[in-house]
Length: 222
Image (cartoon, rainbow, N blue to C red; front, side):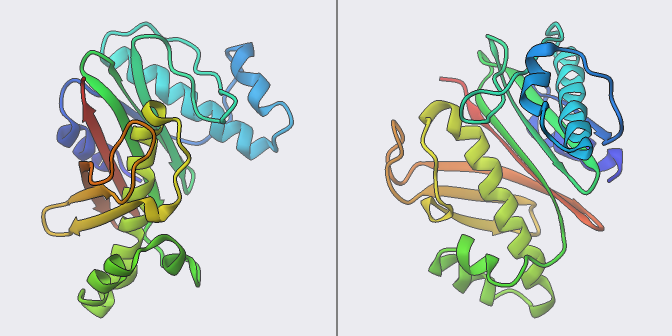
């Protein structure tokens, strides 16, 4: 992954968002409260987790927020400092974090994935019938690529919304339309989820480079 991919997403999400990226590599432990979450994890998972937290603190600095710990909650989601919303993602040896003040955004979601075809049967698990029908209309050589975009868009939307709803969604809770040429997506809830009604819409962005796909969105401040 090049810095260009992160820069392009940063430009899409706007100046209120701090976004940082780095390769996963051995990092020193910083906060005891964070380390508790990975005490029993294998070394690579520890490195991945720490790199994500380093990215998060770098992203905080980009918006003038003092670096702080990001522990893990009972639901395994990051617990952001008061006044902040954020999201962390990692894949293929890279990680990114995006943050914003909660006065500027009600939530952020980002998801990084490779552009390889999904494992057999996974697309059928994550895609709704209307999504599969839209994929079938894409050029054959694009279908696997757009299937990965669909996965990333759903993951990013879930990350943005979960702190507000506290509801664990299945993949069919969202119906996603992707505009490949524009690099955008529209996600719509198919049923109510906590305070969110069915039919709630979220607009997001997708940027790509050879080998990687990055989806992201911010929710308007309430």
